[in-house]
Length: 391
Length: 232
Ligand SMILES: Nc1ncnc2c1ncn2[C@@H]1O[C@H](COP(=O)(O)OP(=O)(O)O)[C@@H](O)[C@H]1O
Ligand SMILES: [Mg+2]
Image (tube, rainbow over all chains, first blue to last red; front, side, top):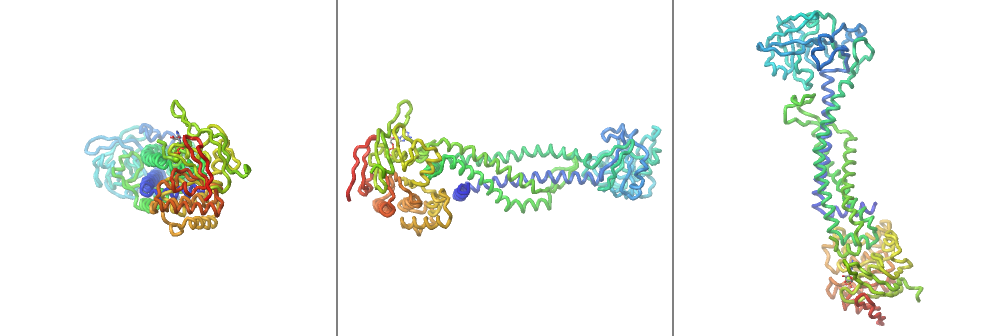
């Protein structure tokens, strides 16, 4: 094995350009795989971080009737805030919010909207709710940028919202858009309008009631509370992991093709070199190699492409990957159209496991691809190989 | 006398299947060689010289008859045993040198020693000694494409001789060389034969080579025609 490595190394370096072509193509494969996987890990991390920061904090309690995908549940999904959380609320680690189904009338058109009451002084979530802490002759409201675009509303615009109160009676009021916020998490802004919690509770006659209780990060207080369902941060971000997993699968098709191309190049090189180097193969055998050892030598030679490629990709790949991790990769299309938490710029995250597993995987595949055509040597007659007569 | 034979060939026949009919390349050959001979198989092209050399070199096997090399019966050896025999006891020299083109002279000569798993210091000593025998100590770092044909063949001799094999098999070693280079390598081999008692067995139809041989075995159509000992 040691001899094979030594010989293979000399043979490869001696082969010159052909070797470096294969090595560069393969090194490119390494860098792209690690970069693409890194982007996915980074996206997953960013999506979970943004979702935590903007939407779910350190975990939530939901009213047992609440179903975020069914606005018809909103009329039932509210209850008195359990007293057991009074202390958490008092020291600012827990923020209740109330969700009511309503309509909004921008330029006289009617659109359904979820009206969310939230404490203007909260800082559990990144929502700029402090802007709601103001006095104007309408209800102050904040909405997300793309919702504002859909509703054709600008900062400072006045419009009307309508809702049903606790007794099912319709009521309406004027609101003023005091601020627009930009957020990567579609669920936070799509079809939602935020107003002060106390105002909403009063409007609907749901004094001291809430739909969702959101904890500050790392301040989750897990207990069993009647009528309320515990949703940990992990529960709520599981769908992100699943989403990323499906995206990763689609992505692996891409680098599968890249890998296939570089493996074809190596396979082709192997077939050609076994054909062209028959005399050399015969000579190895005459000097005391068995055919099996020659197969080993050619396999090591092929596998060494991947080792050299790993070294070459380290030379330009490490600076490139580190630079990417710093400046990130900006999506060429509008990220808000992806339908999940996605920043316009994604920052790849690489783990040692990612790098090591990628290298091992590629080395393994290359070894198999190099071994496969080399098996032909096992059937070669050494005397014919020495004459160079095998086709 | 029989006891000192390093090669004993009894009724060796080699038949190559050629489509429907068979081709008899060696026909009932019986021969023996002693340690230290400087002998050659002589005959026209197609007379079976290479075939016989390959069988003696354990690269091929007899169809009929027995071939014993240093006590090993060719034909009964496993691939591994045959490889070990070549690795430890035999050296090969080819018409077209068969050097590793991308390796240096030093590395080419080193190859058989790597197979024997000798350590680097010992290897170096042996390689330089072998290159001295053939007069190429100034070319250690050259690669075969930078050398002349004569130099290449001298590298090949160094590679065959470096491990001090019991026997060297040389198939048409001068076929690609001019007269001066042919004489040069033949003198080198003769000197090694005398100093190291290495047995040399040639396959040739080159008069220059034949003149150096101390034993001339003429082959015609796979049969031994004459077997002559020469007194110089
Ligand atoms: N592997 C083989 N298959 C078929 N015929 C062969 C094979 N090897 C050699 N021969 C034939 O056997 C004969 C002797 O060949 P060879 O030993 O190479 O002769 P020489 O070396 O004396 O020129 C030639 O006619 C050659 O064509
Ligand atoms: Mg021949």
